[in-house]
Image (cartoon, rainbow, N blue to C red; front, side, top):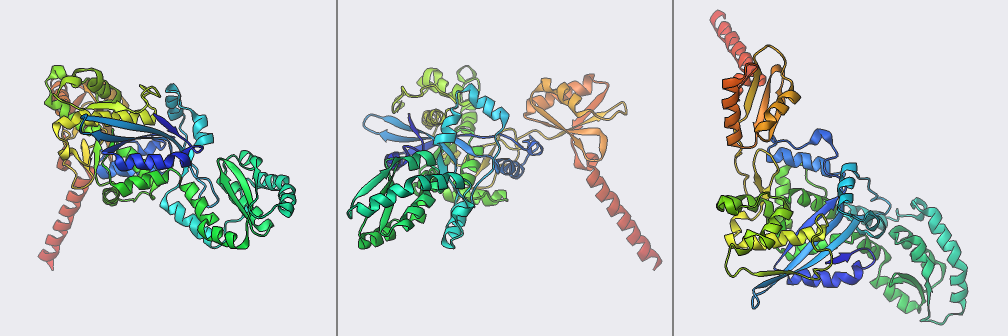
Length: 513
């Protein structure tokens, strides 16, 4: 497993590009700064796909990825084997005037990642920058109109300190140096701590200080070079400072754009949230409308597989004694790697990981999770997966999955139920939820303008039948029945009553005109 950060990203990028080009498919995973920071946008079993997308969009607008796992799987037909080249990228939002970002860091998420030894120092000090196309265009526009200025630099004091410290040395060296000579200024990048904004203005300051003085960064060190007028013109034309800075700030976004360009199949586990996160941070601001998002993701990444959605289908095809116990990634991976799944098919391919000694069995490291996701996907190939393409799992929504490139399925959840108080007391939602929780996952919410009734959503038909049977036989405090809008919706009643009143008025008007 290869760890990629801001120090080695440029060096490793050509290798990463080659691996992706040669891959059969790529699997992804992300670790991020918050899970559900907006309490009023909490996911619900009542959610339609459109409502779930809207909630996720709102929650993730202030969330950023901290780590991205990417595994490029290549296939050797002669050996009937797959090799996964695993990359763990530490990433952080690009920092530059006009594109600075604020984001949520949720304490629950931090504590969760701490349990799995996430290195927050690597995120802070060595994170590869990224920005989406909206930010890129905004910054390019500001640079083209000379609105980017050292006056607006948030680290202006550090910038001035670096220039003041080096200016005399550079001037004295320049006065005596022949054309072609170079001078390394080791303190610039050290004191600038890879701050792209500081480095940008140091370049500008030294290039304007002396005629035909060129500057560049090589092997993490800032270098000045005395060049001829002709060479300066050529260098300035070929290596525009603004373009190089934009390229540096794009950072990991270039990897995402490469995935879009190559159109390789993308595999994730419970990948809906990851898709929103990577599109919003590496491509463009997420559309407000769900159907617009589906159209966008189908253009960017037209072939996506969700191993969690697939696992539900495959599990139901197996005899009970051969099923895995849970659809969590670690459980399914162990099932196919070490359990019954290892012998489900004859002549199944070998699956290996490049550098397995580095980070093996380290769940919630994005790189390792991406490898496990790909491993599960290959193991599931025995069932033939074309029918599962672009079918994305939804955690406890009105449907169990969505289709990114076609119409979503009808709800496969049981019909909603209504609980009514038989003792003329308002329904206590928390109390009823606790009471029904023994029957499985349920969700209870109030019906508008009705304090003696509440709506119940259940995750499966078996539990719904158990609830109906038990409460209608044994309970003297509540009655539970199937929800019917004509009987139970105040809004429908108001419309019907209003319609009746209008109809009566019309009859009277025609009768007595």
